[in-house]
Image (tube, rainbow, N blue to C red; front, side, top):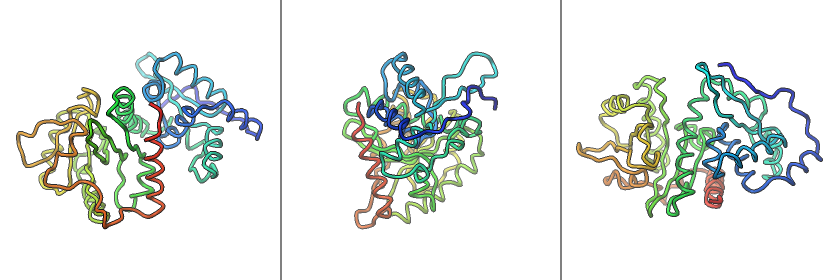
Length: 314
């Protein structure tokens, strides 16, 4: 896939340059860097929805962060004319600052500049942007709705660190709205995989639920109504709480009334995301308090991420 505007020959940073960049960064800037570290790539439009209010201030601030080498960008080639939005990834100075702030090293953060930019030519870039867009919609709604919150957003890499021996979801989320809260694993489907392979993933989620004693819904975010119908026809029996939705059903985005649980009730209506906490009345969702779900290190990671999301400026 041809790509333009990939910066080459990134400069070597010394302590003075890092100190200069650190003096210019705001708490919101650090949130942007954290998101790019964990979620690899976000477009200008996505960053505006998450952190800004208007296009001009968004572009101006991102330009400043780019000049400080905390972030960098590329613009995908568009075969039919027009221009794609800028796609932003974490820069070398940004990784250095995050490492210093966390009292760790860039290596321990899992950052490498070449690997960070590899998303520009990766066949998975569209999938990654789709997963991110799911949570961007939630984050945007949370900024404008007092009773809505993104309690957690864990990337595929973060999920692999915690649950990778058993299951590898595209993301883990926790969403609350109107005094209802649901945690979930997300499977963002682009239509590139056969539905048989999609349903094969359910065995791993069953193993995860049996091992951790946690019943966590699995949400399939599908590209078309036809694919949703065909997938639901393949899932004939399951003990897992599963719901499906179509990506074009965007009344309030994925938070809206687009989710259809797989239940024994043929007339089940579509529900809002937060309402899914009551979507499977025969199941008790959440953690068994007598059975720890993860190791102490994993719990520390979850607590840190939950804390960051709770403290995010609105």
